[in-house]
Image (tube, rainbow, N blue to C red; front, side, top):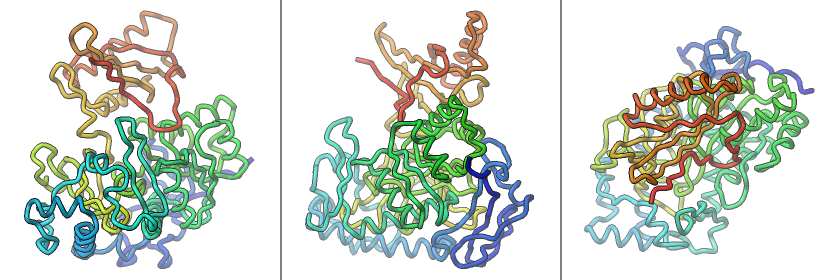
Length: 493
């Protein structure tokens, strides 16, 4: 049996080398790794489940590039703009699509002189990648593209992105930065539960983690019992997975009698799908690990756009020396004030294979530039839990799946597993929630289950302002998947 989890090393390297944040202490050297804090330091670290961090995992708060990640906002914005100007010129000179876009409105790269001028640049949308499929946006000769990745293509032709050798190195940098935000350090053993292939997550995280000096265990997706065996036998310390599959691994291990508290696993590095606070808290309390989210999308790079640190548990630091970010009103397309919600727009700053400009992600978030307790000064985005294009309109009312997740998170006995079905078989829109209940709540008593069902329906109606048909299903009946979980099935004709 693996040894019990060792205790934590938390801290950060800042520009000044010090911090007043409780529970975090100055780094002992330029690497960003911290000295070992006291037990009271550990107890101050927040966790989603409310469990003291000292009982969860061996954690560090390293900073991969403190010279930039802890720089002043003026320094960060100056460096971003310098890189942006180079990227705009590169795209205009080498990609006919952008040259035509600029020429059509009389815009030249030299016209971009200030941050405000960035708004003159036309937005890029997913349709541009589809319309130029597969190589129309590539800015270099094809013999300089050393790898292709692509989206699943479930709504038509897949989105194809190409990477030069330097793009791969820049991607590796982004992954190393995000991994360190999560407390991953050289010498960790990371087990990959993402599939490899055209999906960016597996390869992107794999090579980035290796670059950090982490032992990679390329288990890939599937064969859950083998994953558990590897975690035990190889002393895995970091699990890379979707949060829903991580919970499935946990459940299978519990059924097999595996004691998660005694494993060496300490960090969950999750992505590929949104992770609700309820799901995160459940995984942390049952697996005795520290769960972190990271964000990315195929079009701009893959994973590595932003990541969660050990201080701001509901936000993610953007890797700002590689991504120029904006937040806009998705209706007016105008910028929103700092900290206000809107649609995230990204411009990769050092990607030369496909240099997208002002890409509309359709992901809804807000961004703040206030300093973080971890010591970083980089902008932090709220975790993406909804998109401007995943909104359901039910009888004229806007409904987001994340709203339903928030309601369920406050209901004792409601599990993290659910499916939504939308149909109009009766001529009117009907929203049905199939909700898996926790074992402690599930009973053969029709009366008790019906009371619980009506309680869930009433709470949903109060928040959504639309009626929801609630169906309760027994524990384990909703399919567990290894990739992204599909929560919504829209059957309307």
